[in-house]
Image (tube, rainbow, N blue to C red):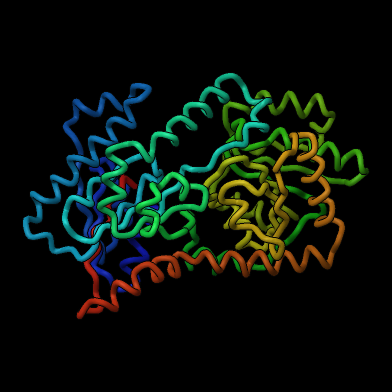
Length: 395
């Protein structure tokens, strides 16, 4: 996100300075961007040891944000910037102190308000159930957190996902605009426009293998499809702590012969999967915004997802199927997912229509359009067409 924001701002003619951690210098300098100024700041090396502790990463991040704002004031006493924007982390639970610089401050896009419905947590491991409770508690604290209240008060614009809007105090919601935290570059959209070679009845999932991604629901859906005598194959790209449990479930359901566990693959290999699959099955229960969904749509791949979080916002009836989750148990969801996949795989005209709609939908998430929509109004109010933008990002 940080890299894409910097590139798109620069491409639109803005003078961009990116403040990031010194650890990122080597990677950045391997792909130099002559029109972007990179500013590097890190806390003393001894403080970085705390990042290895359980809560150390969060503590380090907050401290970095605090001292990074002081660093900018010291480096630029007269602040030659028109706007400062917090880009990453993309989380409403972490503060930025760039609003203290006294120039227009944009916070986001940020997410984090997405939750797993309580009725769908029953099959989670004890550890995952505990993490969901901690997440619920953390979200409840956001409107009360004095640091986050300071961020919201100082921000001129706050960009949030639909589910995250509820965590913003009502008195500052007039500053909020709904924006998803994932977009695609124009280069990717053009590259993905290549003609696909679909394999009959091949379904794809790509992402981490963790409880709240809903892969158990996907496996039960594949089981239903096999019971309905549909010759389907399911490719799972990715890995994670739930892999062993999911493989055991596949064996139990008798579908291990039609499930391919691809593990993590290169981006080029993933794109080949997009081009050869017939549908993306993505039953995640609380993702904010998923790049894999946009990438699949860009390749003309219809998507079947739940009506939760970002996927439920991005996907519509013209590019896939969105499964309602309210008051349903996992067994009913698995059946609904299976029926949606069967409809797409067995109806040629529908698949063609959804594939065309998928490409059209992906183009609506063009990164250039997002950046342009946020900064066009700001530019028109300035005498000079060029805005000097400070993008604060941990990349």
